[in-house]
Amino acid sequence: MSKENLKRSDIIFEQYGIKYKVFDRVIEFKSSELIIQELLDSGLKGRGGAGFPTGLKWKFAAQQESPEKIIICNADEGEPGTFKDREILLQVPRKVLSGMGICAKAIGANKGIIYLRGEYEYMLPELQAEVDFFNEHAKEKGLDFNIIIRLGSGAYVCGEETALIESIEGKRGEPRNKPPFPVINGLMEKPTVINNVETFVNVVLINKLGVERFNNLGTTDSRGSKLFSVSGDTKKPGVHELELGMKLSDFVDEFGDGDTKAVQVGGASGYCVPRRDFDKTIIGFEGIPTGGSMMLFNSTRSMYNVLHNFLEFFEEESCGQCTPCRVGTQQLRKGIEAIKSGERSCEYIDDLLKLTDTMKLTAKCGLGQSVGNSFNTIIKNFREEMLY
Image (cartoon, rainbow, N blue to C red):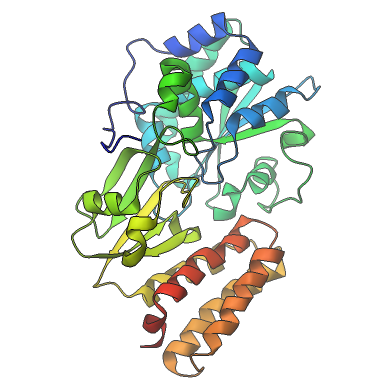
């Protein structure tokens, strides 16, 4: 990968001269099979954090025999420290809509839904106008595909794809059991493709740049560029586009304040990397994957307070459906409070670490399963700050 960071205007936020030019070309000249094959060749992985191969997901959906298929754009950006999807929807919404339209051609979908975070309601007027224009344009191009917008209700757990589906169906936002997976049995029991906002933009980039040029960005395991939401103790807060596969030490050199002691990669559900590991940590699927959130902490920050804040967040946002998550998040918070106050000995930390292992194995969805990521890495690297 190139050591030179990409500029924001180079790819993702580049303003194309003609509206929907890439979409028009794909609809007119590319078959469904070719669209999916190029995605597979590109190695594009989902930009929401999980990293499932996009082409493979679309291929599975295309293979389903159903008169109705659905595409959902997951714009429920609730991960603490993540705000890059908001910028995409504000600055280049047509790329998101184009990506959804290309997906519709590829899998044979006739309905699209943008599931927009409830706190982003202020974006609705302009986004709705863009959606209305796209729907008419798609119809003119002969594509039987219509997009609507649905607002979320501010629940973090609805970022999980099956909980998101439940929410759209008017039910309580709780994760479903898998299998069946959404590409087989999703919204209203129809085959459903769910991708992140940035993933749909990357689909457009692949069709704009070509597979070869896209593959020249990043690394073999982490292809392309990525938007990062940079916050905390940084000299350059905001949204920045970088190639995947860079070392965390290079990231800190560019965005740190000269006293960075830790970086929380991937938000509250991600991993805390201490200074000593910066040089051996890769930002990408071969190292630590991230949905985009990068929080930097310097030596003035208490990692106990950081962890306590994360646990309060998880406790509040747990849907309560499964006991490991509902009770586990409470016990972790109470546990570090008891250790800090001296009510429990420092050995109790080891019991809490075992609890996170249990949660990872038994929690129903990614919320409960990922609590241990930040908990274990902060405890492992800043154990003394939990005691004093």
